[in-house]
Figure (spheres, helix red, strand yellow):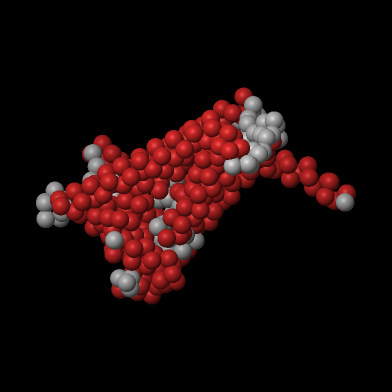
Length: 411
């Protein structure tokens, strides 16, 4: 199915026009969700069919899970004898401990990462089960993402999602619900178990699929802003999965912690670059104000929308100054994570900025009935908590580079 003309023609529009179009679609989606007129609500019979399908799939999954559990229990207790009946001598288990078994100082940090990623995937699955997404996923999610994208992103990636979710919307949305819930449940098993490692590996692949086919590469090609969630929340899910798949020695010798410091530093640098690009259109006009206004108009309690309306009004005055601040903030945080990631000041500043962005810039990601995930503010905040929960070693990317420079010169 070809993409809508409005989306395909977006290449010829100015950056400001693309931002205007994105904001207008957000407002239309918000109006359609918030309108209490039954003529604009999803058809009752369609919503009923969607939840009936979810119930049937849940029953099937429950039955399959019970069968797998019984087989596993039988194999654990009778597997060796069963093999000997057929003349097969079972291989003896190795006495060495699991390479994923962690000692107490690092186990707490990994447990926090396990629960963070597992619950995030489960939350995403439950959000995908909302009536608006089950019956109108393309109009509520994909169409706004397509606005302003380069033609190749729409034609190669997002048009595939459009075809799937407009041809079989209930089936594909319910499939997405269960994939994400199962990924979350599997992740909660932890990396010491095979099912946990399998879920983590699949979650990395699924994150990349969602990033390309659902988020349009985090809208980095269409003027995305870190305030609104670029370069994409599922990249943070994938990063957490990579952390959890690291073996015990990587945690204990500091490679995991050092890798997280580099990841957060690069993330903030990329955020500043995306915000500073002239093609994004944030240095002039009402691009940021329109995005904020589109979020404020989503159906939500007044105490949540009032600060968003106030910020949208403020952003409409002096966009150049505001955007300079929004470029400087991630740059300052990047410098902090590069030079002193264990500093209390850097930790507190990062937490405050991320939670404020999650509230005022992303509206908690899930408000309005069409949110598919909590957006980037919360997952990135959880990643920083996992970093802070690990034992301090006094190093930073800067000090490690400084120490390695003389050794490299000596060789």
